Image 1: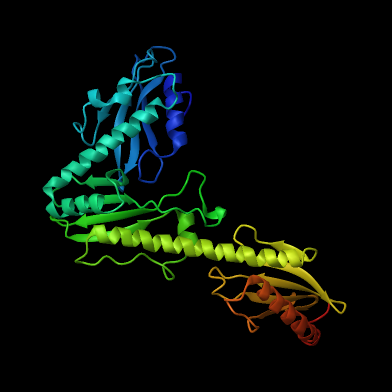
Image 2 (image 1 turned 90 degrees about the horizontal axis):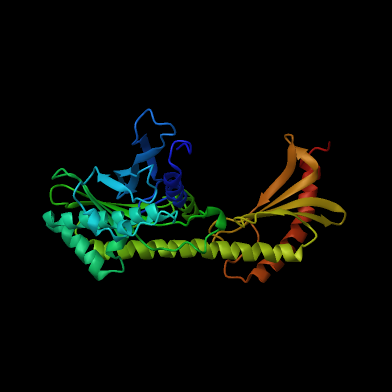
Length: 369
């Protein structure tokens, strides 16, 4: 989008829309296409004042033509609705009637209002599909999911799939900040109804990539399968609870890793070389025992304290295959139920005992420079 194309008052409104990022529930950026001027081609400074806006919605996208007047900044925009020409009368859009050109977010407010009406229009189309209508009604009446939380999209073809894009309302406040987006993260459930009666139901959890990575691979966690004789009013709360528990577990593991590392960092304040502040997954120390210096590295698994940390001893004197001589140890006293302070004390005892063994091994099996 080139800023030299648009009339200044149009550009101001568009910048606010683009900055906001999204308008409805569906993820993905809003696109501005086909900017055109409405004035005669020979007019100097013939700014563009009309364009097509493409808005992600319900797993698809809808596009509307937006028409301003370059010569009349005070006039509200007009709209041409390509996907559903008659889904709403513009006379019913109060935000359009109250358009204030001095407010940079006036267009954004109108678009949100229009999308809300489009959302209601699509939901009303479910009357033709008794099974899908039942799922929608019971979901919005018997659970904490409201009509505003669902983007319904009905394909024009009679047997085309019908989508429910459902906002689950699960919070990600406790997970590491490195996995979060500045604009906020939303958990969505895409439910697709296939067949003329919508009897085949396929759910899919949609998460931001960073959040998906934080929660672990599909091998370690996935949403429950949808039963062929089940209903969304039972299934969606089940997914919400399952996702919530997974997020809580990730947050708990992160909190315990931080607690563990900071216990070590505080105790060995003058000895640590580096540690992972973002994920609390590792720390490195320089230790000395009886004049023998060595690097001590801690790796914490994501599922700590259930998962046991690994300890790596690395020589600063000897090498093996052109790399510092090192040994990784997992066989040491450990109990996931111990307080962090006890873990620290047991680790200190083990390091003091094993350092002598490591020193002998590095001398015997490593090579000096």
